[in-house]
Length: 368
Image (cartoon, rainbow, N blue to C red; front, side):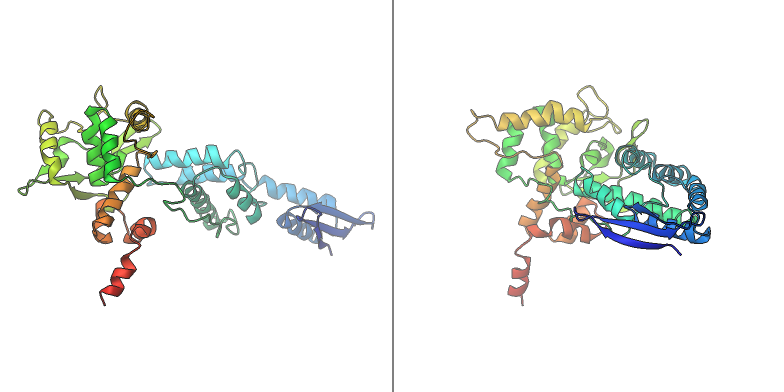
């Protein structure tokens, strides 16, 4: 019978040498590979074919010809998958094209190993959350393949990345003074937009999907926003769709000081007009807003000649983070904050923002 010997190389890597006595010549022969899966397969095929490498090699070629590549497997999954929004499917297709196909895509699924996927995962040049999303997608595909007897096990199971956190991603939490400096330098046509974002915690895609009918004027004088849609990317462009999760459908109350500003802004609009639009009307894209308004405002606020500089480089999404930091500083309970953000679970809010409430345990002790 064939046997496998582990060989430790000088560079610390391990090779696997399959050793057998060739049936035709009776001479001891060996084959070395970096893959323990390939070594095990060769050993099994040699034992099943009377130690004939010729027959074993033919059997391996037959097996490989029937085994899809990783890229083909992902394509098969996407072709069969139903009940997925067009934008989500497009995201999966982008993951395949950019992060899977160019690297591990050509590998046969029957020959790919955990260490191959660990190496691929570690080399992905993405933010932690994006890396996690790509890995989760590929792992889902492998589980789907197991259910259809296309694979025996999921080599992606258990691979993890450093926990994504706001600190790791370099989130910026603006003070109220910094936010006012930013508003002083933004185009006046979009000052109310910034104030709505930072005082609601809405995502950019949610805020730019709001129409006049989504704003309800309460007897208290407050405006309440009905968040029921957001912009979704599809292969054919952006369309209005449901928020990210069921919890994303929510109502958010705005502070009273925004009421007169919103009254003036909403008055000339029709019921289904977008409240925050592109300068020429229609959807306001994040790219346009960033290039024409956001970035110039930050540069102007940080200019050397400015007396009170912003002294920060916030992203658009940091207004959502800033909203949470202000609420936590005001002692608003995390469950309330979670509901305003549209998080499906309070654990998400705690994981992402819990570190901002670092005096909570002290307060709990003092309350006893």
